[in-house]
Length: 607
Ligand code: ADP
Ligand code: MG
Ligand code: ZN
Image (cartoon, rainbow, N blue to C red):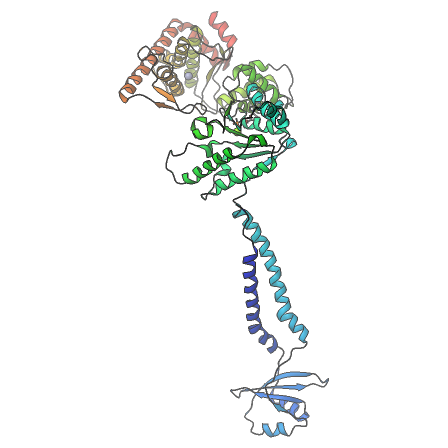
């Protein structure tokens, strides 16, 4: 979009309009103004003035009802008067007999000062209108800038100091940092690369689950690179009118090429980069145009000039393949969930910003948070600091961190939740059921903590198991052992109370999920072997799955899932039956203490 239309045109129309208005006003208001300068007198005064010879001109109005006349006062200034006309046949004689000559003509009232009248009737209104016009034109321009400025992208430009983030703020993610520092290096010293004939990738796409630090990494690049950094979110291209988004893209790249070398960062690019042609919703047209424009711009710019495009998404599967082909985002930088050492590093970064006292065992916290993203960990540290303040302390303790891990996993403790004694008993047996089944099998993570303190999330208690180290592979035996552990809660309820409760709803969901994945994705059932029955469509966002088999097979899959869960349940029942004595003993202990640590649990179990 070139220029906004000149605001002068509407302004001229405005001035012409005001001129006409002033003319009209003058035609209407001026006589009134003048009229107010006419003094009304009675007939006798008129006669007296005539006799004294002061009347100069006289005018009878057409109806004969009114006489307008001018007369000089004692000081000699002429004034206009009006008086009601009396049926007076002598009038003409009287006038002719007047001492000074009277002319019978139109009386033209004169205002006091011609200068003042000019001022009042012309100059002041014109000044007012011009002033208003200026004011409006300013507002008009402002409004136009807003509504008609579709050419302007609202990319924020950052330079070094402004984001205040550097690679030091990003913990872990070493591979991603390495890949990005290459780009930073190029922007600092392009010569070194061009001399060998190396071309820098045009674009790098950061992909990974939410909260892993993609946006943070891009900000760190801005901080490191010392070049202008354009940052814009994909959603900012989404516009109401077809063509506006595309115009914004065009403008962004125009600005960028003017500022080269620079970095352009498009966050959440999936909002504009979705596959074209799927789903025929209204507004698709706009999105497609925007995407097409982006593709065109990416082809158009030359990375040798030093414009590097960065983008981030947690839905790479949804992106249009055209975006991903070489020559566009030809480099993919995975930003994965942090592993154990990564989590320790992230906790360190965030804990450096809060005051701590006493021994802090980061490794323990990191072990307890397998699967947590960087954002989760930042949240845990913050929760710990908040808790410390709530407790009236001025520094964070290890226990704050431990509690906040549970808060983030299971919600806040519900201080005034009232469980009946019977309910507490059921919950205690349920949790100990999980724990014993876990402990009595091989292939399971050690029990870390058992508690029946209710949580705001709705959990009435839980058994926390923590792996010693990060797991990348899970064997069939381990998966089955997990299934058995999950069914252990319900199994304990059945054995002890001879009835079942709703307390196992969450367990049932989890167990089904695991069993289904074992059958459909991991090839862990004898019946189907390595046949893929489901495909994961959205690996970074919870992993929604889609069946890839016929409905007959789907029915068989359901049977197989049920068989697996039932087998696990039987295993759990068997284990608990063998340890009935311990189940009672531990459940009573838990009822009494509310929380048992993993070590205590093991000691009692093996006693
Ligand atoms: P994403 O864009 O991947 O969804 P963000 O970059 O917005 O995630 O991360 C959110 C927050 O999580 C960051 O502001 C930071 O506090 C924290 N965080 C995430 N990853 C890391 C990391 N690797 N190191 C330090 N902090 C991190
Ligand atoms: Mg982000
Ligand atoms: Zn349970």
